Length: 73
Figure 1 (spheres, rainbow, N blue to C red):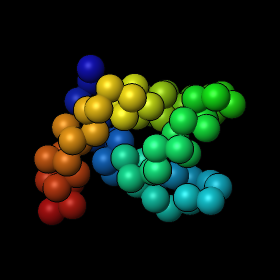
Figure 2: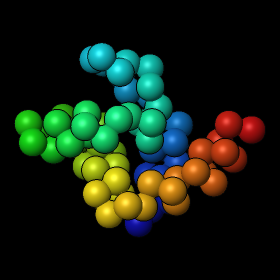
Figure 3: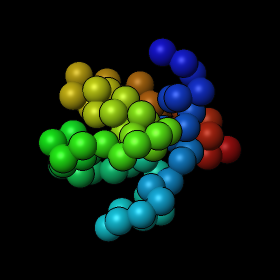
């Protein structure tokens, strides 16, 4: 996995919808699962959301916490 992808998950904000402005890694599980069912957007955002889905599905969201903490500093 590319470290830049993980960094983007903890810094990039959702550009549209109900959770506009929410950092991607902070999106609720049900919202990410909804995208999985309906289809991820095309492009970089879709790739990031698909990656986030896999991370959350496998119970690995805790691995993003140290990156998120260092990105906030």
